[in-house]
Each structure stands twice: as structure tokens, then as C-alpha cells.
Length: 386
Image (cartoon, rainbow, N blue to C red; front, side, top):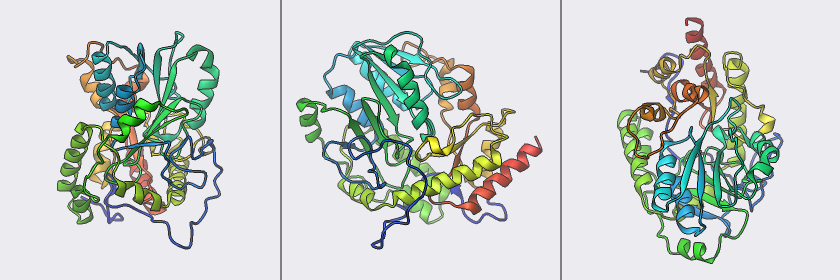
């Protein structure tokens, strides 16, 4: 499966929790800090350390964090604005709540800068979910909000930072995060609000059970043993089961492990790898990506080839031992079918291209320049032969 020059697979689910902080301290990054992260409005503090915060709410998954908010906030939300291009699990969770509570929902599209296309003013009682795609929209979303705050008026703004662990929720009202997308923990997510969510919300949260999933999931052990095929099948089962779980708190083990992880190093590696790929592939990438001084730390490097070869390249990458996800091809499959909900999701041309052909290239802390060069060599080879 693996070609010469590449001994181990790149990407895919994590096999372990990486990069613990040592007693001698952390090697500091000299990259500028772009956001306004503080202990109150972000998962990580200004030193890029995870610290348990009594004003934050920790759940077993990001979907459950958001769903718990809608279920127990007790606000009479009249309309919910949801990005058409986002995880289908988020669609299902939010729309199921809306149907049960007789709330209206509307899908909105995004432009080529990944920013919302909103044409009409929002009002009190409206909610809009804004996605920080791939963790690269910190500044863009901030500027979009400042430009459109009159149109947003008294609407509640929620930022989806599930792909942006290092970012702040500011200037938005609420934000949610996923730990598992960034490091190899078995569960974990956070919900952060810029204001007190109320006594009822806090009381219901205090009654939640803790997620007691194994500290090291079975799929991680299988991957560590080199059994990728069975590990991936087990990973898919685990993810599906986690999304079906009832509201639970993140496990105490996960929170303690998060406190030990060297997130400063993780940030530096991700930014370095992002820049390495962009320097080499930027001219072939038709996406207009922001520079690294405009965001904290990316989840992946989003690559969209101009000739629409994404599906072919996706298969070639996997055959070469480079495991990349799909964001979110299921939206295309469901487009012309009878959907669970009455309002169909209509993607614009840009979103269709993303769902069909986007290659989310791995850049996380498990990898360095050697792995990035291997990815670059494969894409350049296939691009030149296309």
C-alpha cells in the first residue's frame, strides 16, 4: 500500500495522545497571537494551555454541546440560520430540535471567502450559526461581524469552532469546540458563552453523567498495532455511537489529559506545516486562503485543484498512505433525494465544489517537513500528469 519513501501512513484518526508538556517547560513559538483568547472566551488560555474553567461547559461531543444549549437554554428561538455547507450531523441535530419546538429554520450559503451570504436583517429571537471553517477564518469572521452587526441586530450569534480549537468565541455570543478533532482523546468538547447562561441551564448541566468511554479507544489501539483496516472500521463505529450518545459531560480523564498536552507545540507544528504546503501548492490551489497571521492554528490545509480532480486525487492519496477526510460529500448525495426534513439543502457552485473535490490535507502535530514533502511530491506528480 505504501510507496517507497513513506514508511508510515499520514493522517486519519489518532492512535495516541501526543506531545505531553515536560517539567522543563514548553519550547515557545514566536508566531504572533492573532485572536483575543483569554481564559473566559476560549478553550486555551493566552499561554496555549488548557485549564479547566468553571464558567465553561464540557461535553462528550460538540454536537451534544450545541444540542444541550438549544434544549436547556429556555429561550424562545423563532428562527435558526444554519450553514448549508457543514457537517450533516449538525443539520440533523439542530433541525430535529427546531421541529420539536416549532421553530423555523433557514439554510444559508457561503461565498468564496467562506463567509455567510445573508441578504435580509435578523431580529430578536433569531439564531445564526457561523462556521470557522478549517480554523482559518478568525479575522475574516470577525471583520464580517463588524461589517454586518447592524443587520444582525439582536440575533444570537453562535460560532462553530469545532474545527478551530485555538480560536476565541469573540465577538460572538456563544461558541462550541471539539477536542477530538485536534488531539487523540476519546471524547471531549466545550461550550463557552460570553454571559451567564442562567440557573436552569447550570442546574441541568450539573445533573449530567460523565462519559466513561475507554481512555484509549479500541480503534486507537488497533492503529498503534498497525492494523489500519480494522482500526478504521472500529473508528467509524465509535464515532457513530458517540454522536448517538445522550448528553454527557466530558470524562475527567480527558480533561486531565488536555491539561498535559503541549498545545503551543501543536500550534507551531500546524502553522509550519500549513505554510510548507501553501508555499509549494498555493499556485495550484484555487481557494483564496488567508495568511497565517490572520488565524491561530488550522485543522487541515484545504486544497482544491482547479481541474476538479478531487475525487481521483482522494483515492490516489489513500492508496499512497495519505488518509484524508471528505467535507462533506454526503451533502451532494442527499441533494436530490427525499430528505429527513422538509426543506432541502441547496448548495451553491462553490459549496458543491468543496463537497465534491476538497482535499483536507493533514498537518497535525504528528508530522513534520518529511511528511509534508511526501504529500507535495504526490500532488505535484499527479497535477503535472493531469
